[in-house]
Length: 270
Image 1 (cartoon, rainbow, N blue to C red):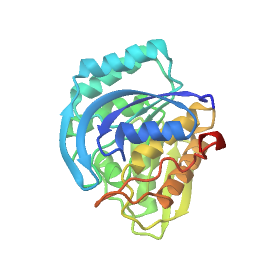
Image 2 (image 1 turned 90 degrees about the horizontal axis):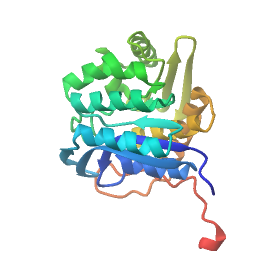
Image 3 (image 1 turned 30 degrees about the vertical axis):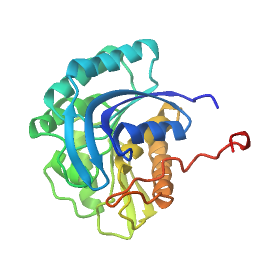
Image 4 (image 1 turned 120 degrees about the horizontal axis):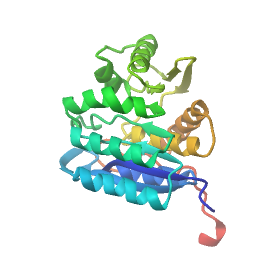
């Protein structure tokens, strides 16, 4: 199968394979596109938590972005873990150079086990500069609360927070509702002209490591192939839900989802 599009992923590495660059590559590949990467940090982690984080030099991050894109032009970009101000500035500078229009930002702030992955000055720069540069920002509820300085305990609160992000300069917002105490999962998509809600039955499992990374990469993939942003969100949410429901149940903590849930092995490879 020939890849349908080319995605550049700017994010951190997860040694356990469930989140970060590893989850992104699996997602893009499983959905039929070609994944390229610019690694922003290397983490040592497993399903029980993060042991350490090693930063990549911002100049090296820029080189990865720019040198890759000169040769193979991305159809879309997915941005994940950006853990300090120098990294964000380097990414912004490189984005201006390569001039790709379709950019999905997953504002990774806290790991599933609770480890903080970004500092306060980086959060402010992200709010001030980066969200204006991207097509869509995809915070979960804790991330949306940090970005908007509001408390979110209902779908109405999610809509209010999304509105704040729009006023900060975001073009489109998808707030993920998995942290709400409800049997129905509700994700809110919002821009200046529309509000949409995607509702799905919640799957009760601790094995949801990397769902945010996976969702944003899936959105970037569908969007790069010509789907509208709203339709890309809808299709990506379905993919993630199916991947959660068929998860392999690895590890003692928050296990990974099944990124390969879309793949059927051709007979000649069996």
